[in-house]
Length: 146
Image 1 (cartoon, one colour):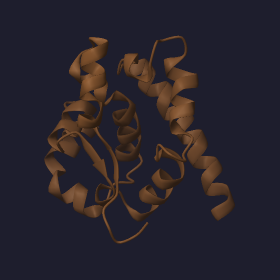
Image 2 (cartoon, one colour; image 1 turned 90 degrees about the vertical axis):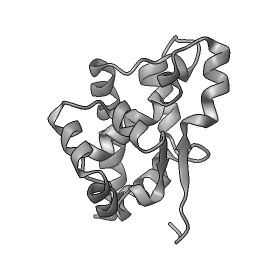
Image 3 (spheres, rainbow, N blue to C red; image 1 turned 45 degrees about the horizontal axis):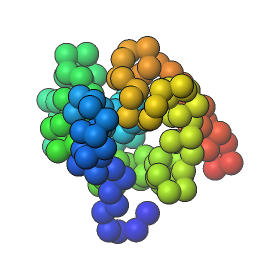
């Protein structure tokens, strides 16, 4: 990654689509919060992020705050300075929407027959599925670097 901040996703990019589809507002960021929750649980967030929102991260990890609430705390944005160097390297490889494989995996494993990626609900069951395919991609990504 370069020294400039890179925006992976902002919920506001999707508000118009969500409104058009008649879905609840949180559906504009579910596709990102699945990835962010995995990053937080794997401790791939930056030291700065961990320090800036230590109480919120602790509440999320303890199960008393949802990932959507944590994401909302950050104005529904996922940007590079929130991630560790390793987190950014992986996100740049996998999550970056233009060249990564995340959305294809998301579509295959979660969207399936739903009309769009935005129709996927954030549920504990879907989180397990998402964390599974993200972990698989992370393991495969790590192998060549070892």
